[in-house]
Length: 468
Image (tube, rainbow, N blue to C red; front, side, top):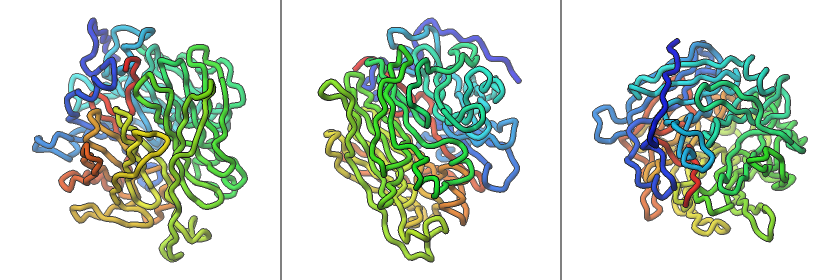
């Protein structure tokens, strides 16, 4: 395995921007990195990171132009992120870093791969592997999920503890060596479940969300455990600099699986959105806004999406008792100008675009139908779309939206037992609010499934900013 090149820049990386306004003027992306996996397919092959050409003027537009296979089988690649980003402009940031390495954890294996995207971004190379044993011994955590490039270190969330139960939390890697520094939390408070995290850097506030512990997600959704309340319903606020728990806010007793956190990119705002996947009473999904008012952090439900009745014969076994398809909002993303919020309805088969200029009153402005248990919608080019829209990524200028279709291997098999064939599609998002599926862009990954997408140079969920 090649060694990690020493790469200390004496001037800012050109893909770093002080503010989201500056980042929106960045050149358009020409490559996308996509996490591919075989876990759950019955195919005994290692997962991989694919490189996709997303330049519409290229002869290989919409094609896989590079790939790096992992050395082990069974990692379940899921989320990943950059070693460094625009947070490098923050006052207490580490100097001389560049956006070069992708930090790619295995959600199932707890292994971490450091992948170098230079000198040839179409031919990335694994330059370091951090074994699960090192992660466990240094941090006490397992089942690694979200990666964010902080000003002073790389942060990774973990859903489990040493024994695979809880509590989950956050660990840190050194920016230069990628050594595991240890767990982030100094005072955890009541937090037990973990999932996503992000922050308001200028306010020294971190937010974390809750899914459940590995015993209740690795083998599929446990409906009995869900009814018993073993899936999270809170968000947690932390003092980022003191690494101390501040408050736990329950969203509601019925709304469960609090997943993706999307704080406003404008650092003067102390607001953000988070989704809940399912309501125990009516199977609805919801979007919640957190905000600071009256000298305290508060949360309010701002969007609710109903389940849709469907003939029992058309439902997977897990949904037959309910005679309905839940929307299953499993990912959300916020444009860099904080104007548009995108929701993936993995169960129904919709990607929705909301105008959140007034975040307390989101307004639905566009819907695209893609696959789904309910719609079973085809791509405009006629191709069948198995699964439904899941991971969502937005370009920095807000004009392009990329969507993949796998949630998590065992859950894929429960909700789409006929099988999921991995795909990546692109939608064009016009400033007038419309949303159009690009009929010329369809990447078929065959029997592999695909999850997170990262855009070369950065995207709407990769970077944090300290200046408005």
